[in-house]
Length: 134
Image 1: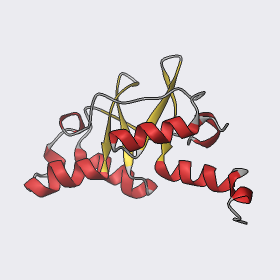
Image 2 (image 1 turned 180 degrees about the horizontal axis):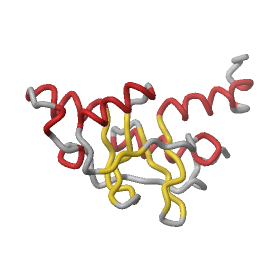
Image 3 (image 1 turned 180 degrees about the vertical axis):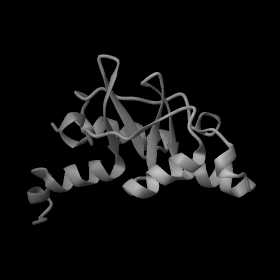
């Protein structure tokens, strides 16, 4: 059984809720990532994703420099514990139609699990030999 801890990304990129959407876009572009965890006083509050950018901002013609990330993030966060079974995490993500799950341990953000991480973990698991993959 593969645990979330084994597949998650440990270096999570965050942004303070008071920052502008323009700053969020700059960070996401520079780091080549599709989401940021939004924090208030270093505590995870929400998530801002490419989907939020497109559906809540670009489609309405809003000016990125003039709006705060807190007003367009998705919240509340759905989170998971690092010791959770990876298959169960995948099931949760599928049911909720989300592609990213922040990982919280002892009330601290310790990672993020993405659908790509799950795919990578499954490809690297012993299942690949069962399925005839090399």
